[in-house]
Amino acid sequence: MRVCSYEHMRFLLPGVLLGTLLVTSGLSQTAPVAPASASSLDVISTDLKALLANGPRVAGSESIEKARGYLEAQFKALGYETRRDEFTYGRFDDLGSDVRVGSRTIAGNALQGSKGAEVTALLALVSGVGTPSDVAAANVRGKIAVISRGQNVPFAQKARNALDAGAVGVIIVNNTMGELRGTLGGTLDLPVLGVSQADGALLRSGDSVTLRVRTVDRTVRGANVVAYKKGVTAPEILFGGHMDSVVRAPGANDNASGTAAVLDVARRVANTPLSARAYFVLFDGEEDGLRGSRAFVANNSAATRGLRAMFNFDMVGVDVTPLAVGGTDSLSQAAQRVIPSLQVFRDSGGSDHGPFIDAGVPSLFFHRGIDVNYHQPGDVTADPTLIRDATDTALKLLDTALPSAR
Ligand code: BES
Ligand code: ZN
Image (tube, rainbow, N blue to C red; front, top):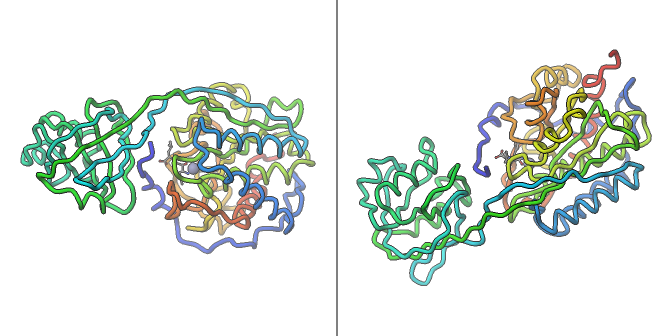
């Protein structure tokens, strides 16, 4: 699930950064909102700091539990009620996997679905991308096959081809910068490790190595935080974003930024009629396959069916591209008519609006593109001004998403 799959980003149109031009506006019929003030930008910084204080907010971790406590306290201070919607799912975790060559230890990532095992064997470098003939040419029987990541052959296929040819392990070498993470899509009776391109270059045919893949299948207990004004059970609009992050990534842009955006909307509309028409939901388990948003839609079907719109904020704190909207075409096109400078892109539903679109809820996905620190330890900063700009934009679009005429 954590393999890069961002072809949709190429649909982003070039354009100018919206900057701070959007901070003032009418919001006429639907919601008079609190003005954006400098002090409230400080509040966004405080939220970001609190969310980032305890390390990566991996679903099921203590860190995300602390984030939940912080978020609930903020909503309550604003006069909202909160509840936790709990759900469970299975997750494959890597407990630390590597390959040892002589005195050198190369850290890697077990591919999801890999067998946990320790094997010592000779390396066989496969040229090509791991087709059956590539593998046959390398004579991998009894050896650990080293195969490059490649566009047209899925990880599972490469590994299966090696297994069929008698390999006792597989190392997949990235073909681009950074660590290699990926999934086999199902389980395979073979240890399969992903390593970076730089580390892969250290591996030579004939080297004797020890491949160690240590994995566990866990049951994760996730919980979405749902905030609403007392008595609201039939929201017309849902503002959402995921609060979890991936292992090792602090998740400032992905997605403390979107979490802070949801809180910012909640603060700005707290004393307006809109607050009685909205749900605010911080999803858990997004990075494990949209678990929280799928659970929400499945377990709140009446509330979901009644929604006129879902606004999802994911990665809105780093300006890779100008703020863009994806999601339901009609809604994003309408949004662009209201704000002509707003970029519209065709997204593949790889965030929490996906399950809502599948459930027939018109949805808008706000984001600013994929930064270099995406899912990396360097994802440590998000800019409150950009987050505020996203909430300004969202609030400007309320009349479009919730036309007063019913
Ligand atoms: N925020 C990211 C990815 C993202 C960025 C999606 C910009 C769309 C536009 C999200 O948290 C993520 O990593 N999603 C996964 C999919 C999910 C089903 C595990 C992905 O896109 O690989
Ligand atoms: Zn995200």
